[in-house]
Length: 397
Image 1 (cartoon, helix red, strand yellow):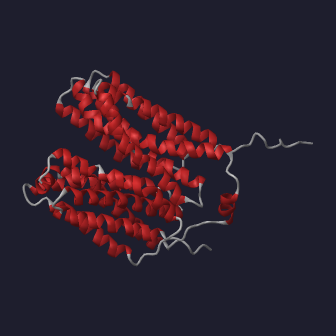
Image 2 (tube, helix red, strand yellow):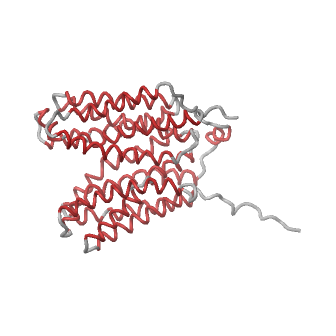
Image 3 (tube, one colour):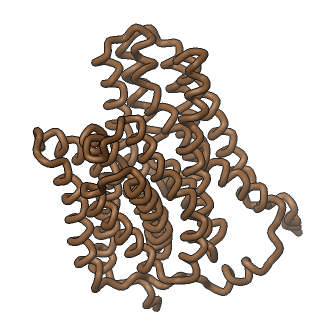
């Protein structure tokens, strides 16, 4: 009998607390951009400088993902969950009172470190609990936080902007109390996994590893590329500003619906095949938008793109990558999301250059990323396919 996993009640409580952290993380992803004007006034800085401060989150991720991922396999998962919560709490409490951009930039980097620490502790914990499908629902928790925050900021109606930061801090404090008595499952490193770590890595496994890390970049770039340019692309296509903004709302709606769809069918269909289908469908949706002349067709394609590309296929790819290295789940998470962080840093630069030629080119190049992600998914499926060809056929009398 395996005594490592907590009983069902404790598992549910632990899962709920881990999801609650990602509601706070959803706040953290948008809270600076949602308060740009107020922060610029507090720091006596133009919006351009505030935008530069926001980039510190990406820098923090790049600095921390590989380190936290590696150390998560050496120390307890709970330590890194609490480390992420502590960094986010410091960010939420200190940012409203920051008086200059230098301190604010440090706090933004701290938020990026918080993101990487949470990922290193949380994704691996769900894997150790034997329910990697739960990783998919983390995307829904993030979306919930991203949904609540703009509503709260709008409802403040001229009151102190720091209230939204304190709400984020309150979520983290309450969750820290809830999480304190809970035990995390011990890393499950059976003898087969340990011996696998000592064996020489096969060429196919090495090839799959390269494809996975590139997929970490492509799957993140696919979403960022779309969200950054869909509104401007819609306006350049001649659609109204309201319709163009609505495309992004439909993308968000599709992403939430896609999370639950993916959660329902994952297990019935292999994750590797889902990666192929979802990325191919997302690529087709972009192709439709590029040729569409009607707002309703672009709106439908935006919903389908969210349903597929933003449904949790990045997390599905991570689950498969962790399965490839069961003895190094933390490091696999760190490497995978490190390349995702590179995407969040480089995509705005790449698309900015492309936009000098045309907005259509900047947006349309996302089709190449979608096809790249599909190709990588096909390559992963091939590399991980069990090798049966070399086994001798059974001889019948």
